[in-house]
Image 1: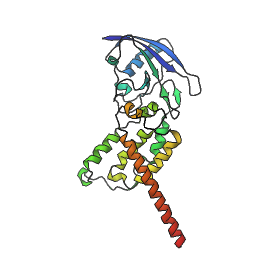
Image 2: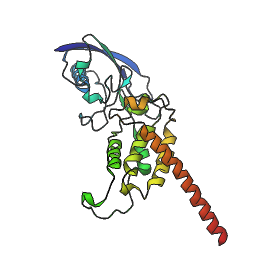
Image 3: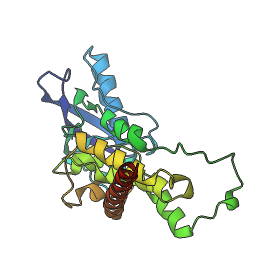
Image 4: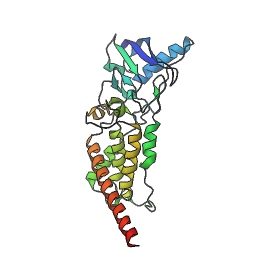
Length: 262
């Protein structure tokens, strides 16, 4: 079955240029193609007319890389829950529909061109502490390090985050707590992540607060997340961050006592 769709796509020549919506007709497109393939079809027509194609991010097209995020009719990644833009197929639209396509709308994600935004603010959060540097020795057999199954399952759930930015785009405050909490949790739940657990959460939260808004529990992030990551991780992040503050305070008081004794 084929569909005829009208696309209203945000076009913007550069970060400092004024943007505008442009309308394109996509006629007789298969309902079995993905939304990104729809943009490919539109771009092929634009190139054939010697017009500038629509710029949009994409890579794996398998729901793994997190590159393809756009707003579709006001919803991050479109109307289906637990689905990335590249996994959204046209069978979920109706013949004759008008579809509005926009980039992420968040101060921390400035527009580069058309549907492409700069998500390096996420990279800065990961650079602040989303890794393990403590010596863990050579690779061991999987069963040599005991990990409670509940912790292993939670760590895998958190590690499913693909860093697409849908949580930020959906949040009225432009907050990144869901992303940050997932990155903190998938390391903090495992033995290898314990030596740096408290310094990690401190550093990552502080870096997050430099770029993003504050969480006020709208829960839009959870609803928009294509990997359906739970806001329970935000509660875990808040708890770890609070504990880290107390630990820092105790270390400061201890250092002060030692200095005074000397």
